[in-house]
Amino acid sequence: LAECGRTFDDSSPFLHGILHPKVRKPAVILRPKNRETTSVLKGKCFLETGENLRAAFTTRECSSLEGVFLHHYSKYLAAEKKRHDHCPSVLDTCSTKDPLEDVLQEFQKVVASTPDFDGYFPYLAGKIKKRLGDDDNARLAFAESVRRAPLNWDAWAELAELIPSKDILVQLKLPKHWMYYFFEVRLLKLLEKNFECVALGECLSKLGFARNPSLICDLGIVFHNICEAENAVELLMWLRDADPYRIDHMDVFSNLLYVQECDVQLSCLAQTFSKVAKFKTETQCVLGNLNSLRGNHEKSILHFQRVLKINPSHKFAWTLLGHEFIQLTEPLKAIQCYRNALKTHSRDFRAWYGLGQAYEVLKMHSYSLYYYQNAQLIQPYDVRMHLAMGIAYEEMGRWSNARYCYERASKLHDPENIGFFRLA
Image 1: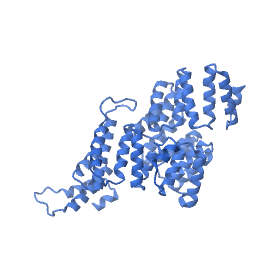
Image 2: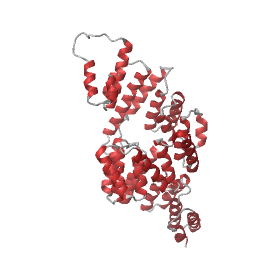
Image 3: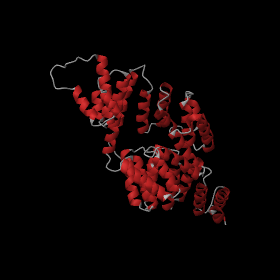
Image 4: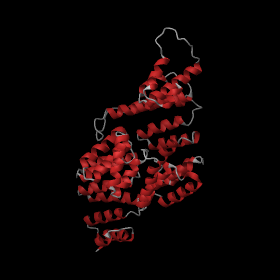
């Protein structure tokens, strides 16, 4: 079983079979501890090969914290797959009972009967609650998780997405572990505290973390937010040059290349990863952005739908899919996509802005204004938000409000001087 640690998918099932020879009496009687270790190792290998139910069945009698966690984590993954398979299209809503509810109910009973649980128990509870839309309790669960297991980065990352303000952060009383500072960078990025995020990121870089991929990706997005697109692309390009076959964060890189209209670089990125990992979500995002840049919006929609079929909670695929429906003048489908995006990340200003555009197409300008205002609150220094609000006010005949928005836009970074033009 130690060989399974090399993650050879074909070797692992073969070695598992050796553990279950078809003889009436086993040659060696495994002690309980050894049997537990064997079940855990087998469960891990089954998870690596995507056999979630086999992993759950194998670990059903485990009593150690690791074994119990693995058993219920396998059930969670199996339930996720089931809920995806029962929805034929990413835009369909399933009316049947969510299988995650049963998984959560069973797991909560286990947690209640295990007083000495570790940080991974509340982590799993938080994952399930977040997927069920119970953000408040999910936030508390992730906070408890990082207190008990501060090295679990995924718990920190999930928690960052559920904190809408610094006031909530103070109430959680999180541990000042060294991982907290990477969490703070992620949180500041999500809260659009861009300059604070850059300052903290530079401090971490000077402390020896300049080559940390997660930090580089976060700072790249922040530089893009503050209209320093060249610095953003340079950071992600360094990450790609350092590890040409790294697929993590390449979906983010493709977004930056799309905004900069770098067709050649985006095409090279798509060709590389289509050969390496064609059906990974990151590759599908790259292909979606490339087709969108070239005006092939129908193909782009197919790629983003594949992303969401694999991972319905993908950070920004819902937003990008909504943009494509806007391009095809299908505002109702776009609205559904943007609303799903906000369920995943409520502070995605692009989703709020997209909703404003969709209602603008429908000539519902009061709704459009509301969503533009929400986008502007999150991204106050983005000229597009002020221009959009000004146009909405114009359509509603509120000229003084429109004039104020255009004056604000003219004072921001507006290379095309649209604010001055609209003001005139």
